[in-house]
Length: 122
Image (tube, rainbow, N blue to C red; front, top):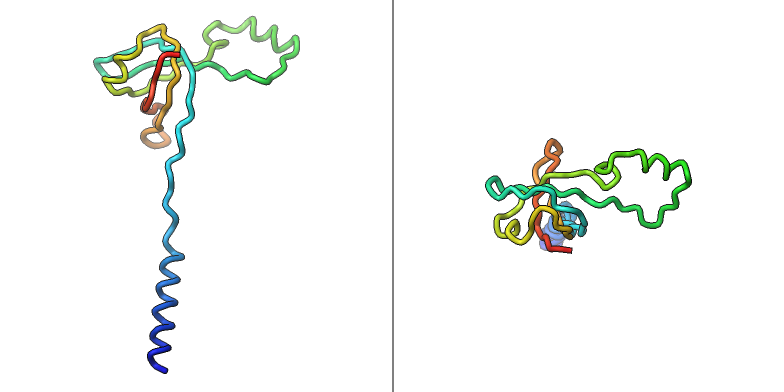
């Protein structure tokens, strides 16, 4: 009888600890983005890319079209963001290249930059 109580206790403890262990988190796959390289700074390992705006599937009325015509050209094309980049990756691109790239977020909520994990000419 004591053996059954001990066995039941061990089973309960093992089950409880297995339930308390959180599942492993998988890192989400980075989505591929498109943009135009504006600056490559190989000395400090950074790259600036103006991302393309994704307007696919949106219908614009006449008022929205007029507003867009009045915007700066830079605003109409997208915002420029600076990223960290490995020296080997930076050798494959130059300012003015249209590229496809993937970014891994780095740092906490205070940082706006990420690190380029993959980049190729489009």
